[in-house]
Length: 305
Ligand code: E4P
Image (cartoon, rainbow, N blue to C red; front, side, top):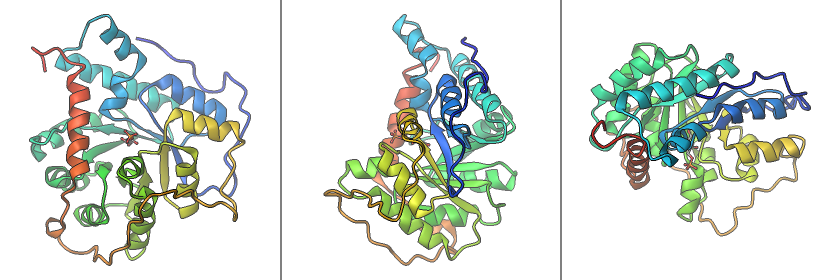
């Protein structure tokens, strides 16, 4: 497998803007992109991966092009290798690793994967879906002192359930990832969900950090910074465009272009109820799990899947 250059071989042009409070993550499965973005920005606070992104890693894609696939064990070894490469490039940052979960995966199976994956690197956050089994697994994982990133979040009520299921965890150990781009695709303003969750969490103890995900354009990144999202993860092209533009910050004149997206109204939700009492169903969470599991299974030979 490919080995990559270490940061510092290319001259760093920029440094983190002094007024930037939001952590900047790269969303991707290719360590070369990690190296390249560090070289362009001069810093990187973390990285998120998912099964789709790993299936697009150039080594994996090349293997599929040759008509070869992985066995179940090989694909895990490949994911571990990629994650270790990324982790070595950002040892002070966080690297999110996603468990395999389709709609019938029980919490016990997610937890068993999480225990293994958490041992891959010293700076991992384990991604669980915001469905009932994923929340059950996360509640146990934080008690075992694992760091978690709750993914495929599409509603304020799901974010409330994440807060409640992980109550008692230390700050920085729990992320919630609302997917703004996939909400935009449905004609609603995904960035409203970020603002609504931040407001709702304002009444809490700060143990869950909001990680703006499914970023598709520079304006998503700038609006996440303007709103005060704790973290934003963005694909290579978006971070490259931001770096090429001198890492401009959203100034007082910045207006997020809502275009014709419908607003998502804020709801008063008590975040201190038992997590099982929230209505966490969302069609996009189910669809997202289907897509992630299909992309993962696409890497594996039928016999070994
Ligand atoms: C990151 O954690 C998410 O998996 C990612 O941002 C999803 O992005 P997409 O909606 O473009 O697939």
